[in-house]
Length: 309
Image: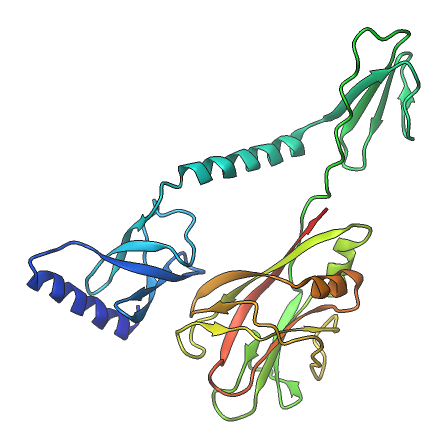
């Protein structure tokens, strides 16, 4: 909790006491942090790392919450519609995903002709084969058909892949900054603009080989103790290095896909041309770079989630 946040909380508490009320005030969530706390816009000020109850689930930027003022403000509950319907849809989607993962027999069909496709093994009348996902398919050849076979289910897209960075770092004035293990952007001290990057080897292209990429999303956390507390944009680029180089070159960019306040975590969807270059191996990873002190910031994370069609 920052001193500014504490002073604001005390002012709000005094205002509530003087009016004879010990209730709550409304605030908007600016970001959700890596610690599960939230950064709030409260009384026109940014209040960071405000604690939340376990009952406040699925926290996200843009939520409106009730806050108990005090020396240490606390979120009491979320304001808005009942999330029950959304929870039900999410649970159903997860249940379907789990059922498909655990399913052993993928299809059971029959007909008077032999089954089409390769990999079938005849067991007198039934046929059986195993798919590339390890699922079992059954086919039964009949002498005569009294009830039509159900249609064979459509193929399922490959499971999503998660790719984490092998390493990361920062560069300044054309060389590696050995004192900074995390990627930085901007210049806070006047020593030169910083650029940072995440390195994945060839893991991104390997995860996409032979598949059609539907989307790529990357998650980041804005680290504390670097720059202003307010939201700052990430100036994202692509690069073509498999591992940390002596001098970091930048390629496509910048693109401001994500803005985060201090301690916040967020996810950005990469543009189609970026994911195409990463999937093909033309580009190898992600980088950040900014000029001057306004957008000086440091970020961790860089985990890429790839979905396929």
